[in-house]
Amino acid sequence: MSPLAERYRAIGSALPQGVELLAVSKGRPAAMVRELYGLGQRRFGESRLQEAVAKQQELADLPGIEWHFIGRLQANKVRPVLQAFPIIQAVDSLALAQRISRIAAELNLCPQLYLQLKLRPDANKGGFERAELEQHWEVLQALPSLQWHGVMLIPPLALSGEPLQQLFAEVVELADQLQLPGRSMGMSGDWPLAAAHGSTMVRVGGALFGRD
Image (cartoon, rainbow, N blue to C red; front, top):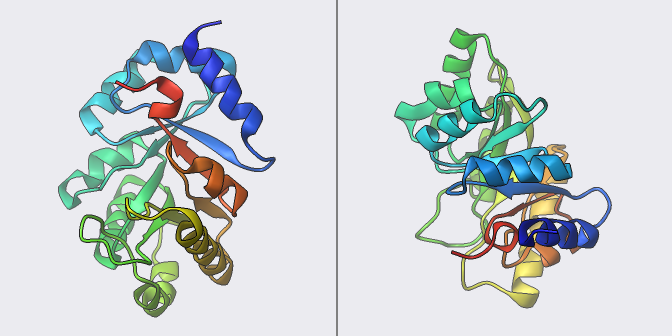
């Protein structure tokens, strides 16, 4: 068994029931995606459009791959990202959501979206603060050509232990309030804690593909 297969099986066996694995394949070769596909993995996350499109073309013979765009989405990249990704995990503002809605309607698409949350101060990340999201939620829900599926969190780097667990609990509470089933929380460093505290999808890169 290859090291990649060993890591994949170890993560899969540790995931609680109902928690999905998103393999963060950005920066990884298509051959590794193909190997994971052969082991049963179907969900892959990319954040660099040009790299992702080339990878998608190389893997076009594999049916049923679910591509998630997980990077920061710039306004001028909305159209090509919509054409390449049915699922977008980083909608971090009302203005971006409105732009996605307009372009999706033009393309006759209905992407599945996650709202990026920012429930703690963090100068390095965008996202909706709780009060802001509650204020705009009615408008966001009314936007055409969109499927709101869940919320997504990237916690501050310094957060760990009990404070991080409390943050995960707040995300779950807010998702329930908004009646959104998806809670994309947890990455290579904290996915076991996230999976144990309400995440429905963990985004794992280095711990799965290996550290560079």
